[in-house]
Amino acid sequence: MKNFTDKVAAITGAGSGMGRSLAIQLAGEGCHLALADRNPASLAETGQLARAAAPQRLGAPLRITTRVLDVADRAAMFDWAAATALEHKGVNLVFNNAGVALSSTIEGMEYTDLEWIVGINFWGVVHGTKAFLPYLKASGAGHIVNTSSVFGLFAQPGMSGYNATKFAVRGFTEALRQELDLLRCGVSATCVHPGGIRTNIAQASRIAPNMVGFMVENEQQGRDDFEKFFITTADDAARVILDGVRKNKRRVLIGRDARAADWLARTLPAAYQALVVMQTRRLKRSAAKRARRAAQLDGTRA
Image (cartoon, rainbow, N blue to C red):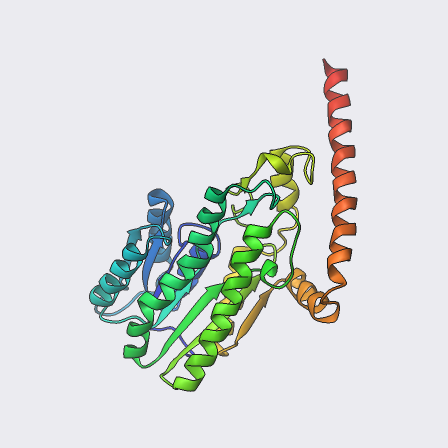
């Protein structure tokens, strides 16, 4: 798929971050959109921004539809796929982009939290793939883009639930790509591994109480420190993803942090874990020092 003009793309998690940037950039290239998100207000805003980015067209305007849904709801995803194919008279691309984050120790993790993140990050990708695949095959030229993470390349303490879902997306998508290659059905697949992207995922993440004192000093400090590693903009990430689709890449790494993590996991597949532990301890000591200084400053002011 060398261009997106007059193609139809379905995007989950379109209300913000990479999903919004993908919608705006695709609209700018004349691609019709079916957008989905759980947040009605942010989804509507993305729709407006995409319409504003669309080029002037002779005849029918760009078709942009929106649907509020939970990607973990299988029936809702299949209903949306069918409605999209009907409203747009076909579908060419699906970006299974919706995702959430969870920080917790394994011992202290609640099953409800684990089920929540698996439902969105993994089952959402599975539902989106299976619901849209028949329509992509019918189009004769389709592409599935599933979002994993840098944490689908290497593991991180306190992120076991997130790691599990993103490693699962990676394995699922790599197997999917191989099956599609064997079928030669006109559909391909790409697995995306973003590093730190400047989105609201850190502020919207769930941080379990068991992380306080183990890896972070307090919940907000944990969010803020995590956000410091976000070095790539969502717009830049979207451009890299779309370029990867044009080049039919099997894997897309976004950001120098993702490339470094990929190199580390390939070069030191077992030893990298000890390096991560050492770095985590160092960051924890730094965070504790900052917390003590802040407390002393507050005491002086009082």
